[in-house]
Image (cartoon, rainbow, N blue to C red; front, side):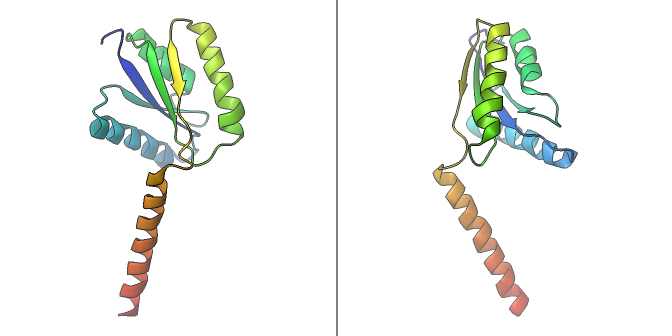
Length: 132
C-alpha cells in the first residue's frame, strides 16, 4: 500500500445488534466499490468493532497517512460535536504525521431527500397493492 494512500473511514455509532453494525460494514464495502476507493473501512464510536482509534492504527500500520472520516450520522449532535473531535485529537496526538479530515454529517445532503422520497414512494405503492 502506498504511503500516500487515502483511507476512507465510515464512522457510525455502533449497536448491540450486530446486524446493524454489519449493515454499516456493508455500506462501507459498497462505498469502496461504487466510489473506486481502494481503502474503505467501517469504525464505531461504541458497541461495534473496530473502534475509530483501532481502525486508524491498523490502517496506519499498513502505510496510510491520509484519512477521510465520514460520519454515518443523520444529524449533528453530541457525538459529532464532542466525541468525534476528542477522538481525532487523541489520534492526532498519537500519530502526528497523519492528515485527518472529517466530513459533515449526512444532514443537508441532497441524496438524503432522494432516499426519503424513495422510501415514501415504496410505502405508497405497498399501500396501493393492499387495496387491490
